[in-house]
Structure formats: C-alpha cells, structure tokens
View (tube, rainbow, N blue to C red):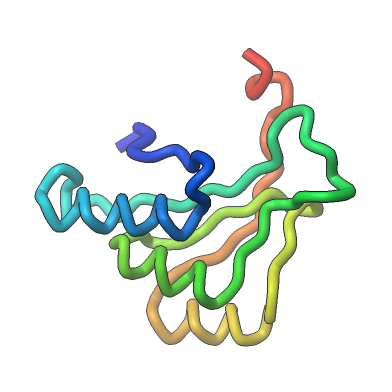
Length: 108
C-alpha cells in the first residue's frame, strides 16, 4: 500500500518481524496486503563492520509476518546460505531480490 508499517530499531530484524506478525494477527495490518522486508545500509554506514544480512531464518520470519518477500541492497548486503535461502523462498512462494536504492532520495 505504499506505507511503512515498521522500522527496525535496536531490537533487530527478528524482533521487528515478530512485531509485524503481532500487528497482522491483531488486525492492525491488512491480511490482504503482503508487504516486503527491505534491508538497506544506512546512508553513512561503515561497510567494513556491519552490513545488512539475511538468511533462511530471516525468510521464515518474514513469511510468518505475512510478507511476500525480501529486498536487500545489491552489492552491500550479506546473503547467508544462498542456495538454502533460494530453495526456502521457492518452496514457500516468496521472493528475494537485490535492489539499488537512489542514494540522493535517501538523504532527503
């Protein structure tokens, strides 16, 4: 629907996805609209220490939260156990894709 329903804070991705699942279960988020987990580097993030990462467990939690898939920043993310991740996504009808954000838009 073009809106953000959750931002990851200090609690991390897993807790955020659990929060989204709870919101959906409580009817606060439409069951008809799936949504997408988007993981990007912060505009001034040190790429040597802390890249966004996803793996099979992230995908499972996204599915439990009622999401359609995951988009990660291409070339600036860690994808753990890629083959297993792809197999899990295919088996559950989810997608995983890389995106290239417009950095100029992110700074506004």
